Length: 276
Ligand SMILES: [Zn+2]
Ligand SMILES: [Zn+2]
Image 1 (cartoon, rainbow, N blue to C red):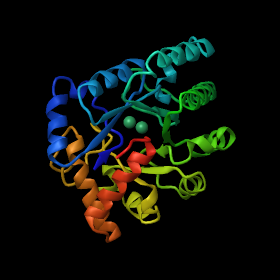
Image 2: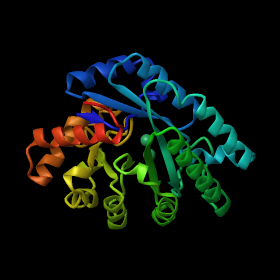
Image 3: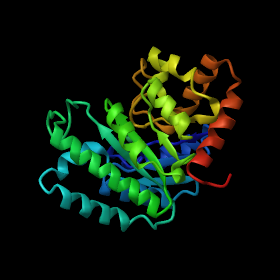
């Protein structure tokens, strides 16, 4: 199994990351990718990956952190791109992510309750495009985050698409939406599926339409704890729970779980250009 999206770099895992990695390995997780959400967490991801052969990294600025760039605007984006560039040649950095657009109104954040207004969305778009360019320059894969911004993100991806992103991009934690699936299909992108598939009926229906060739698994640890662990309140979520997700998908699709594991692991290796 390959957990294509786990935030072992977040404070929730401070001091316990080595136990979490050990449990993941014992549960059959053969590879993990830690995505950054800003410069600090990108750097932290590299530090962690340094200690483990099978942990890989994506560096990037999450659209939520466009809030922090509002004062400096343009200049803030260039500064961040330069900072990411200082990390990009580190071993284990295989992707740029997570990057994208996010119009969701988060209730609990360090930025307070904030609407994503037009100005902020413009900044998110500029940040996304700049990071897509970075991925092309350095031949890295793309981990795309989209929350409630389908139309805008598809417009940007259509505009800025490059064939070098084919089979090297993923809609992480993909919203259950046929337009996203169609775009992914046309552009040979992967679809990331998380633990919420075990309690969100729309996602369950959605994965029935995703070809196995396009499917990758992710936990999004520490978030999105799958059932039945969610009802048991066994927080935080961690990569060792990936098997619970694989098993659930196997049941929904009536496919042997070993086949789900084999195929999604192979897909993850293609996504991040890793040799198996
Ligand atoms: Zn995300
Ligand atoms: Zn994430």
